[in-house]
Length: 435
Image (cartoon, rainbow, N blue to C red; front, side):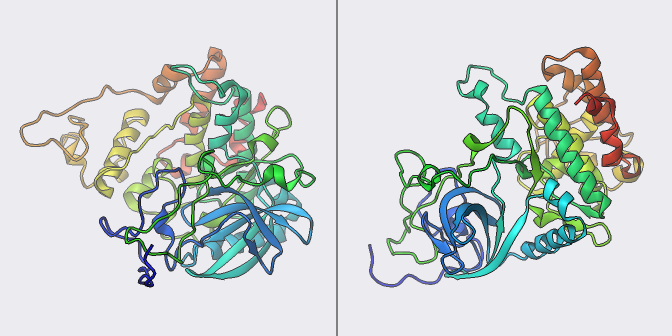
C-alpha cells in the first residue's frame, strides 16, 4: 500500500470512471458514499457520545444514513443509532416532526411512530453528522416476509408474500398510524414497506455477544476489505462494509403483531408541503408525476399501492430505471392508464410525450418506452384492469373477500385527489372490519 497521502476526495458523488475504490458486490451501501459530505465510516465496536453508545450490529442503511444497533451504557439498554450524511438536511425536518408529534400527543405518538430517545452531533473525517437515537425495532415489511418460517426453504415458483391475515394486520396498523399523523396535520411523505417496522420483544436482557455482528467475510456478515484503486490508504471510508442484519429472530410475528412507522425525514406539515417530495418512483401519485403539485393525499395513494403489494406479493406499479426521467415517467404513466383507465383531460394534457404512445384521438398505439425506433413496429400490450391483474395473481382467498380488496384498491386509487378517502374512512371499510 502506498505511503504517500491520498488526495482529499471531492464532496460530490463521482462520475462514471472516477471511482475511488475497487467494486464491492456485497449487499451494502455504495462505497463511494464515503467522502466529505457523505456517510460516516463505522466499524463494529465504535463508540459515540463520549463512549455512551457502543455499536454492535448494523441494522440497515438508507439514502441519507446508516442505522446501527448500539448498547446504551448509561441507561443499560439497546438503541437504534441513526447516523446521517453530513451534507444531508433532511434530518432537520425529521427532528422537527418528531418533536412536534411527541409534544402534542406523546402516548399516541409512541404507539404509532418509532420513538426518538436522544440526538447529538458527531464529528468525523467527512464532516459533522447529526445522529438520532431511537428505540430499537425489528425488520421492515419488505424484509420480514423473507424471514417467515414457511420461506426458509424455497421451492421453484414459490410466491413470497404474507399470509392474508398478517398482511391485513400490517396494513391496518400502518393505516392507523397514518390516521394519527393526518389528524395532526402531518404527512409521512415516504410511506413504503421499508418504513413499516415490526416491534421487538424486549431484548435489553439479551447478552451483547448474542447480538454482536460477526466481523467475518466468510459468513457474509461484512464485505471484503475496502481498497482504493490507487493503492493508497483511505481515511474517509471504513475498512469494511457491514451487511444489514435486522433483528428478525427477536421479533414477534406470530401473534400480537405490532408495527410502527419510521424514517420521518420525508414527512411534512400539510400547511408547509415540500417542493420535491421523496416518494419512491412506483408509489407516486399521477398528479405529482405530471404537475409536481403536492397535496395531502400522497400517503393515501401510496397506501393503495401497498395494499395490492402486501396481499399479492409484488409491486403494483413496478417502474424500472430508464435512460431518462422522462422515459421513467412515461413507463409509469402507461402502467397507470393500463390498469386504472385513461387519465383525466386535465392531467393528460400535461403529458408532453403522450404522442409517442397515443394518437390525437387518445387511442393507444404503442407501448415501447421512448417511442417507436426507426425501422421498428409499435408494440402493444393487452389492456388489463386492475381487478383482472389482481385475479391473475391473487392468493387463495374466497371470492367475497377478493371482491372487497379489489373494490377498496379501486376506491383508493382515484385520479382526482378529492375523491380519495381519508385514513379514517378506509379503516371503516368492510375488509378492515374483518381484522
